[in-house]
Image 1 (tube, rainbow, N blue to C red):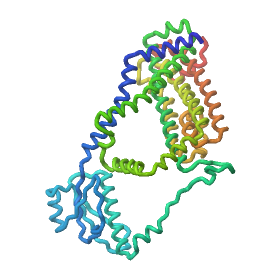
Image 2 (cartoon, helix red, strand yellow; image 1 turned 90 degrees about the horizontal axis):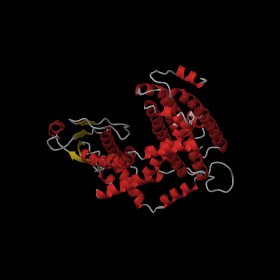
Image 3 (cartoon, rainbow, N blue to C red; image 1 turned 120 degrees about the vertical axis):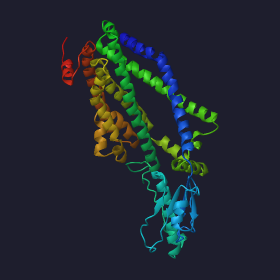
Image 4 (cartoon, rainbow, N blue to C red; image 1 turned 90 degrees about the vertical axis):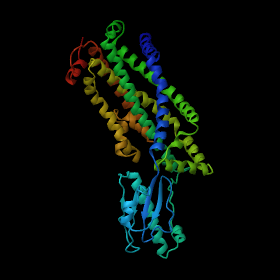
Length: 445
């Protein structure tokens, strides 16, 4: 244990004290803040107002108030052919020709537009929506049906679990709001695991490659066993990653706040366009409400089974890291300075991670389905998929089986990686195949 601790300490201190670590740790939050601010700034500068002239000889939109957000609508009259040649001179970007309806029962209408520039999908969708709403208003007014009668016929349906808050019965006690929170939390935890495996695993591989190329490992191996060296490297690099992650969790919100205050307000206020308008409407709605929804969200977050979620997430977090980091370390030991060769060897390790992340939507749509159960127990997928299922309270026996299978797989893969590592670190100038790696596993010195 003393030698293992020395290796962990060396790996940790040597990386944390590097200027590159300090620069990346500090510059990453600054870069995120800069990207956010510049994104809003360029969105505000690049999203100019679109002026639309609409030709409506039948008066379908006469009594409809056209929306005026990122698109400004103006009705034009006269001869259509003359308007086609003059709308740009009148500072309009688009001319829309709205034909009359054959009857109130007409299901669709073909609207032509004229524009010298190609319109974006969002702009076309906004214009279509405005015209559709206006024509629907016209049909309603001329149908003889009062609008208030239509409104009275509409009804909202909110489906909540009948066992929510009940002291009797068994089954899922979650509400719809808790399901939404669980989905968001599942995405966060799944994506976090996805990033950790790639970033920290690659860091371990590069660390092994550097020591092998510089032949430092030949000196170290004379006093420690290969397995101790491999385990110490994985633990040391993992501690570096966790340190960096904790610093970012503290720095990113602080930097974002300081930058936005320095620029005179919220950076999101610079953004314009349909997406920004929707975001502002949501914020205004939240600000205008009594606060009951926010209270409900806080209550549902408190009611989640954190005593199961957090410990299980920590186990899967470290289990996934150890599993894939040991494989990345074996890859680093089996190759030299040829990065192209390293990419080829990484493919079998990366593919399961990508497949697991691609399975995420299926898991969230049916957290207790066959795909979800298989993916959350299969050890190459479980570090990503089981954390995504935890907020949905899967059966405890499935969580326990997944943990046991993951632990056994971690031990097995660490042992296999150590067998490859002890041979690979002394191999130079030889291109290694997967068949050769199989021989290294059973090699007896």
